Length: 252
Image (tube, rainbow, N blue to C red; front, side):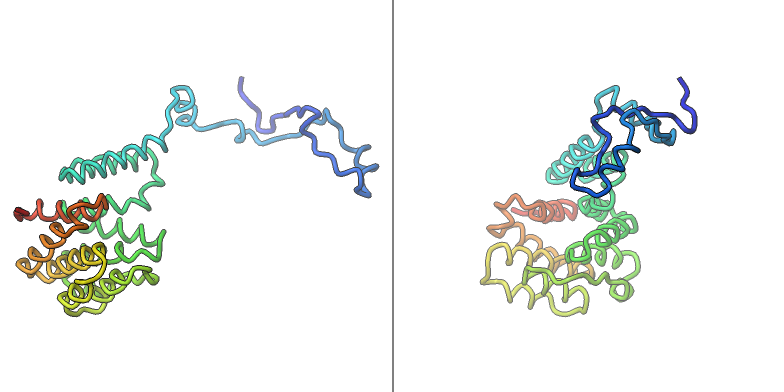
C-alpha cells in the first residue's frame, strides 16, 4: 500500500511520555496528552533503501563482509600476493565505502604495485582521519617522492602529531627534514628489538626514496633478519619481507 506524504501513526499508550508527577505542569499535561493521539510523520521515515531491504531479506551484513575482506587482504599481502590483497581491500570499500578512509593497508599494496598516486591519496585520507599517524605520513612521502621527486615530496609533507615511539619520532624527522639514515640505525642498534627493526626498515625505505638501492637492500634485509622482523606477527614485519620479494632480494 502506498503511503501518503503525511502518514498518520497511532501510538500505543505505553510509549506516550508523560511528565513526572512532581512536575508543576503534571495536572495540566494530563488533560492535553491523549494516549490514542494521531501524529503526522513524514513518509521518508517509512521508506528504507532498496539495498537495506535486500540485505534484510537475504541476511547480508555488508559491514561484517567488508571487515572479512580486509582480513583476507591482509593475509594475502603477508603471503606476498600484493595484487590479490588490493582486490580484497577494494572489495571491502565496495561493500562498505566508510572503510576507505581507514585502509592504510590498501595504501601499502598500492605502493608495491607502483600505483603511487592512488597510494598517496589513500594515505592522505588516512591522515585526515588520524592526524597523529607518523607512518602514514612517511608512506605518503614515499609515494610522492616517486611521483614528484624528493624535494617536492618534502614540500608536500604531511605534518602529524607527536608519535609515542622514540624510533618513529626520529624516522619522522628524517623523512621530513632530511638527514643521515645511518644515524637512525646506530641510535637504536642497542635498543629494543622492535626499535632496531623499525630503524632498519625506515632507513632502507629512506635510501630507496633517494634511489640508493644498495643501501636500501642492506637495511631491508637487516630488518627482515632481525629477531623482531623474523619472529613478530607485526604487519610491518611482513611488509619488510614483501618489500624484499618485490625487489627480488634474496633473504638467505
